[in-house]
Amino acid sequence: MSLSQRLSEYIAAAFTGIWIQSHEHHDALVEIARMCKDNKWPPAIWDIDRGLQSNGQAAAGTSDPLAAIRTLPSLASKDSSALLVLPNFHRLLQSTEIIQTLARQIQEGKNSRTFVVVLSPVVQIPLELEKAFVVIEHDLPDRQPPNDPAPARSPAYRHPALAAMDLASVVHEMHMSILAISHYFIITCKQKCIFDEFLRPPVCQAG
Image (cartoon, rainbow, N blue to C red; front, side, top):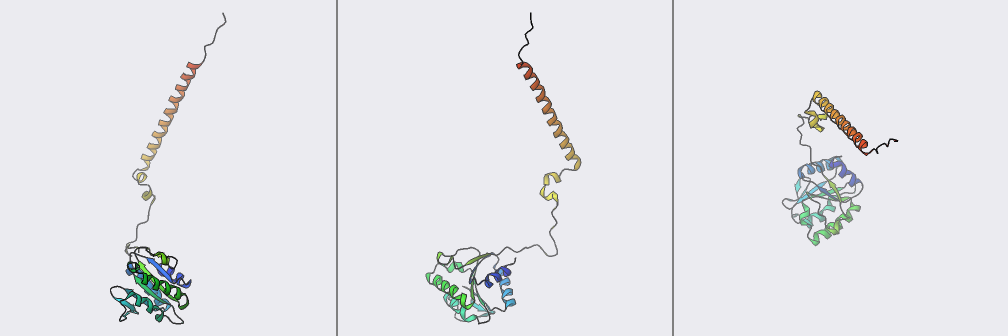
């Protein structure tokens, strides 16, 4: 299941705090933007470098993370949800004020259909917000070129030792093993007979 499909399910279930663990932020943002476009949801992205961007337009005076979080309710409408994506926001979660503002917004989002989405390579959720977020792992994309399909795996892939031997070699090895086992049993039986003969009590003959 793709990231956008899992994200859609959590949004439909009204999980207003979503933490996406991803090492490919560009790919994750592309999927999120596609999902928002398909559902006609206004997306907004905030990062420390560019501030708040909504519908591809930069909003003035939103370099402050608190201001960006407080702007989220104004992005939603009665008939639509709104998402605020926060890349690498785990770096800012040492602030008590940010934690409190985020907790309040996530709680109020259940009524306003607004969703806070943290995009981070690690899961570092403060204790105060642990129950407010659900975690989604974004799998790494398959980098296999589309015109260069991966070769099918043959039995030789799983058994390289057997693949290196031809059928005659396998039969020879089996034959030698059988001979060795047979030889072992013959020697063992002979030794047992000699041992039994040694332990057998002598027969006394009547005088």
